[in-house]
Image (cartoon, rainbow, N blue to C red):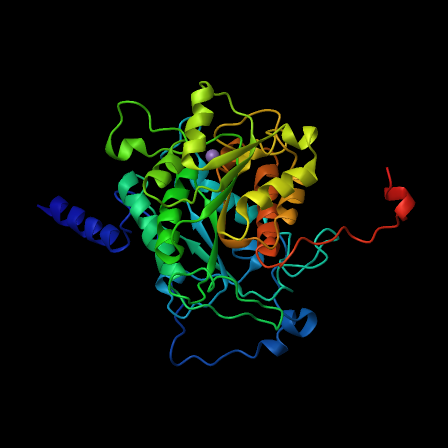
Length: 406
Ligand SMILES: [Mn+2]
């Protein structure tokens, strides 16, 4: 008689702490509650503070937000204000080969710890922080790991929620609004940098963007087309994969006919792949075009293709050579270097970006965190690229004009 009662008691205690993530047990965050009658200690007289001052977070310490930016769970925090928010979308259940990108947001944040968004580089001549947008890490969307239809709807609901939030309107005079001119309601909307997640996260993102901006152009960095028609014989949710989501986005009218791929080098089934890709609205810049035509021509081609359209940038980390970014689901040898990708991104500054993402970082396949660090560095570049009105000039190095002449 006693055993059922004990079991019921244990069950009640476990359920009290159970999250609504299915059957697994997750400890819920504890709220620190100060006792009402407690006197506050004067830390100034204590050994630590009197001798060493503040308890500063170092590059390798502290809670994990992107580049130590302020962090809040924006979806439940109505007081959160930002111009560019970072949001994790830990979803990886539509991958075709190696899963694991649900750990991408963690790996990218971890890789970002040493870089400050208020520190500039020679290449940019400035920093994301100096350019004035209020940056905030909005945490992760708690997506279902078991039901893809639900997870995709959760991502769309989360993205729409954050797109609908009021902007902060900058932290310095350098801030320039950028989205009101393209929004169907004429109002300035926040922009989001999404940390994936497998590439399917772009479908709910494009659905959410469509409600604010209508169809958008896409700049798609990837080794693969991702415009393939859904696998023959598939129906319903099974049609949506990380290789078909752009085709489905086109079916739904979410894309303009002026999108572009950059870095393509995958094996194809035949010419019909490119013909179908064309019908989805994309032009192809191949990996080898960077050698055959040069990096300036690659940048120029992308800029010409996009023009003044509102544009969404999606970067699959597999565009980078697997030697430099091995932690991804479908690696393709012979890719661009991290430096080449960064150089192209700088050249895209001033286009009318309404959002950006980096996807397919799957850190279980990483070595020495190199993929997470590369991805975080690319996100830093997004944050500058999305704010500058034109590409930065080459830095004023110790070269004369004669040095630069060929
Ligand atoms: Mn992809």
